[in-house]
Every structure is written in structure tokens, then in C-alpha cells.
Amino acid sequence: MSSEWPLWEVFIRGQHGLNHRHVGSLHAADAEQAIRNARDVYTRRHEGMSIWVVRSNDIVASSPSDKGPLFEPANSKVYRHPTFYDIPDEVGPM
Image 1: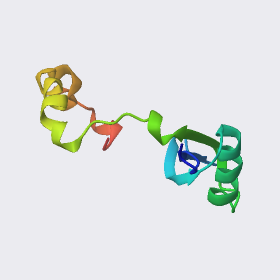
Image 2: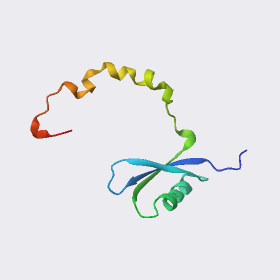
Image 3: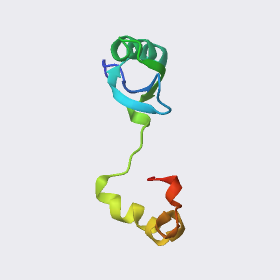
């Protein structure tokens, strides 16, 4: 049995942001302690509005080497690419 606490990934939502941003990792015994430690370590200047902590073991990610096969099907769906729409001049740059 490992004597090391599990690793948690920390995501903070800023005061003016709409999404959570990964800010770092920390070790904690449980989720409650991870939230408290994340608050103490990553929001010292009161910049956070919400904190998410996720056990690193629970995160599943694709590999950069899978980029081609994973995202290739999206290229055949031209309706997802707004290149053929006419945008009025008064809209400005998008």
C-alpha cells in the first residue's frame, strides 16, 4: 500500500471567466482536503470564484499521436466550418 496521498488536478474559475482553467496539481487525502488546499495554494489573491478538483487517476485523455484518426471524421462535415457563409459587413470581424 502506498503511503503517498492521491494526486488531484485543480481547476479554477476566475472572477470574470466563464470556464474553469487548469492551474496545477496537489496531493490530498480526500476531495474536501483537496478543495481546501487548492484554495490556499491557488487563490491567495482572491482571484477564484469556483474550484474543481479531480483525481488524476480519473482523467482520461487522448494521445497527441491519435490526432489524425481521432479528429479526421470532423473534416468531412463541411457544415461545421463556416467558410461558405456570407457575413454582412456591419457584423465586423468574427
